[in-house]
Length: 99
Image 1: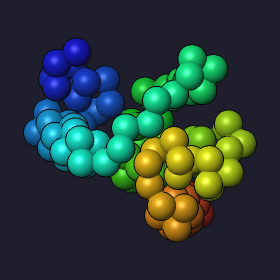
Image 2: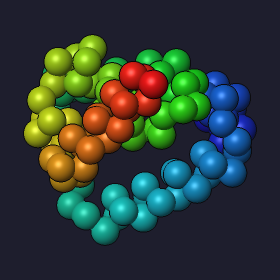
Image 3: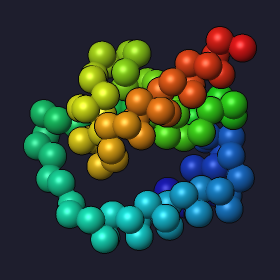
Image 4: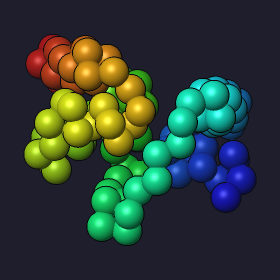
């Protein structure tokens, strides 16, 4: 898909999509790539990104924690992030929904 097509689906700006993708590729190339088996693939609906009050990582973290029942550690491993970062993102999302 093009950046424009993705931007239309998630209701974001083309430049935002490009920047996010570019940074993710750079980080991914610097770190060890984790191979997931076919059973480990988790589908994330694109609709979760339409809520503009949440950052993309907050959206993913909330979805995986609340809907898929994954632990903070499992989410951190999947997203190649620190457990504390995942906890912080999830708490920020909860606070945004509470207000």
